[in-house]
Image (cartoon, rainbow, N blue to C red; front, side, top):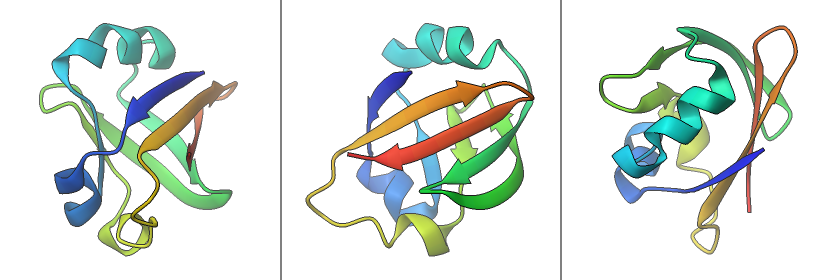
Length: 89
């Protein structure tokens, strides 16, 4: 499990983003794979590419703009079979 901050630009444009200070932790969590099956607040978003160069995973603007303004952190859990569960805190 990893907790990372929700960035305003990521929320606005539909991405789960992380800063370079979280890069090693994300690589460790995701085992440096290039695609994950994402569940966002228990909704199946399907397979998403992990963009290691720009530190992001596309979740879709439709989903991220619905995050309440008082929520500031993502909780990430990586499960078997390349499943990434994302929820906000």
